[in-house]
Image (cartoon, rainbow, N blue to C red; front, side, top):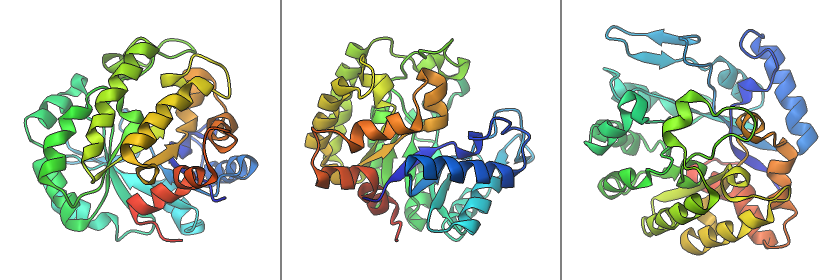
Length: 301
């Protein structure tokens, strides 16, 4: 069975990732993937909020650089694709989005609007319309991180029906870290209890009525489980997701380098609670672990 991971901040795989050469990071990434059995993945390259590996334009607009993703997609084009982040304030937002799928490995966009920087207010006010219009024009799927704020995407789902949206991290609020304090950038998105997050997922399931929305099944062991591996109490929520969206619109992701920080989960644990589950059919596993991602991102073999 092919195993494709829908999100990993793979440049963080190296213990010295901030300063290590990208070639060394790439070697560490391949070794880890091969050890776990990951055939391919979507790189979510992130170097922090300190201005590293990005260009600043007049007016304070940043354009991120993707040296690791570009290297990975060049060296192993069948195993790696990546998403980019484009500012809605970029004076060339249409041009920047139009270039994405022209780059080797360029596959998608991601938005991460936060209450802390006014992003969620701007999303609610419709200020992302030019961004999504360009994404639809160039057929660039968009991953959307909207923890507990999934309803904000509804007007855009209606306005841009030919654009593929993917709702990140099951669409519900952030769970508090189990290892140490929760990152300050996530505190405004925390939903404290499992019961509240499960209840919140009912609202996410209602969004399945929009055929241009897919769901990234990510961080479920932290969001929906109070048990150790294999997190069996998370599977009923996954079954509810399958009933609502259909398994063809749900893609598994480990977000491994973040999951290990939040709860100490290994990459293998993030995968094998799905892969070895007796509550899922082989066909469901094939869609969850690769088929849905290929379909949503039009990622050919």
